[in-house]
Length: 409
Image 1 (cartoon, helix red, strand yellow):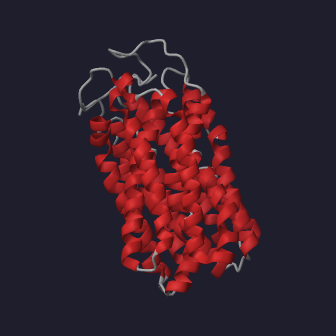
Image 2 (image 1 turned 30 degrees about the vertical axis):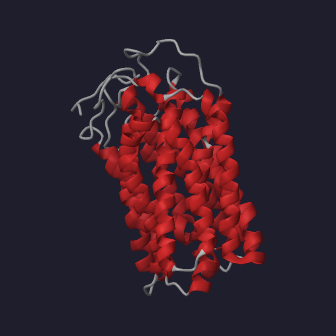
């Protein structure tokens, strides 16, 4: 790895034509089915199923949080090997297989009550979800090459907004089915939605630019972990803070705020829709912010959103939280990825995104357990959520320390 990388990610490199025809937006929308499955359906929808699973299977909050920790551990393991697997088999092939396997793991979660098997399935969904997410992000980064910073940030935001689309789908489909068929039916419908999203993603893959065509013959390296240390550490804090909120916020709104099922569904749908809108709202802003300020601004907004239901009781606090948190948590990922493109050579985009995802995975492996243990204590779920707010605020401050690459375009 180089110690002081100053190349612009948009600059042409050997083996890459300087003038590249823009990839159609609909291709990026199809690639966005990756985070739809890996994030929206395989990870975040667990918050909707946690309360009925916890009641039916007699789990405490620590046990319930451990399932998301297993998912996060799988995500971390997947992120660590994605670059090597992508080099061996090609990002497109890995993306196509991994998104399908993630959907299978999601559907299978409705087939067992054994806690050990649930842990294994959550781990597998995390592992294949990371392969899906990272290779899809690499393909999207390739699709966004050569454009203006604002357009690049918007295309990356559009890809990550797939997670918000998955959240919205789960808000519409899961609660009514859980009321009739229980939590098992919820997992099955999530598996079915994952299959549909997989077919859409497969349909656009042939039009997506391959990361190998962008890389040229550049070898390994191409980015500096030392230079990006504030970004890596801040992103790890973000992972720990956001996942604690995402795991337990529904349980909090039900137990402490006593919100009824229709209000919970509406809250989750608003959160998902806000995440979709964020792709367009944050894109121009992130295109202007340099260094770590994009990640700092978005992570700070996430922290503010996570605090809303804790300081403002009732529906108003809940829906303000959904708008602020939902409208910024995926924008953090877009901000980090946009910076990674500026701080790394094109051939290293998938590798650096994988490294960022690994840092994120370390944080989100820790967050649910810490929050779950606090939630089982005298402070209840509210104490666990306050921990989430504190960690997110710290991550925002750390992100401010990141410098911009000297010659980034």
